[in-house]
Image (cartoon, rainbow, N blue to C red):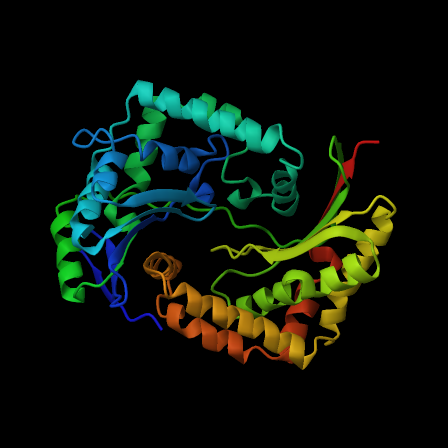
Length: 412
């Protein structure tokens, strides 16, 4: 259980605070509702580019990292398809330092031609090293493009092509900043051993003067229903062939999400998961296997994937994966298996709540998702999932017409 207080400032910034009486450290988390889903298909990768640019300093603080380090703190950020998250941990008596820095770069980021050119080079090099010149690097990009036709989830956070970042102009980048990095598009969450009223007052002090820059929400194209199986085969210079099957599923906040997540753990929850136990150890068809849900704000994907052993054919691999998926649709999960994955989720949740940064991040995420109280309800929702819910999710999801299969063949 994470106790919290929430307040929305006049400029639209949502503030959520939690008093953690066990830690001498504080966590300040600032989440912006901007990710790859908010980009134009002609200019992708901008949200990730800004993850880099936001550390390039403001006019008041040309070196963002130095004040954090001087306060004995640490900071970082990440971007995904739905949002961008900036976080700082530091001693609880230095929370004001983090708030000053974050409020400053929300309104006064110094985007110069030189800084933009430098970060463009960094991002383009990252694109090439991690996605274009690395074994299996483009696999998730191909899978997204196969599973989605209209929605921006069809490209990865890094973007569709490095050309989009290389061609980005300073006016385009400044316009992106003005549109998305503003109070009413953000959630500030703080976890520290400080009085909640004091934390709310500090947030008001540093962020209330920040003017909002109202911007009309750009419509995100809805993905049309998938009515037939999709398939793509590519050949790459990789050590082993992989087979990946993705299925369309619901949003992170849909009632079926907890069942979906538990299904992924039943299949791939470590060495005792069904896929590893049956397809790797017993039948010796795969070298490795995995299953996961994307957990997106808009309808996402359930993914099952495996790397084949040299003696396994693609047909054998596909048949084996489908067999395991459909076995759960037939209600073959045991009481022991289901209880084990529920216990795993509950343990991970309780362990995560010992850390101030996890608390701040979770409060920010659930607030952004539109259901803040879910942060404390979710364990009960996982506990309530029964065998019928597992089987129902699998029957509704693991259907050929909702599948996208990517065969990533090792070059002969």
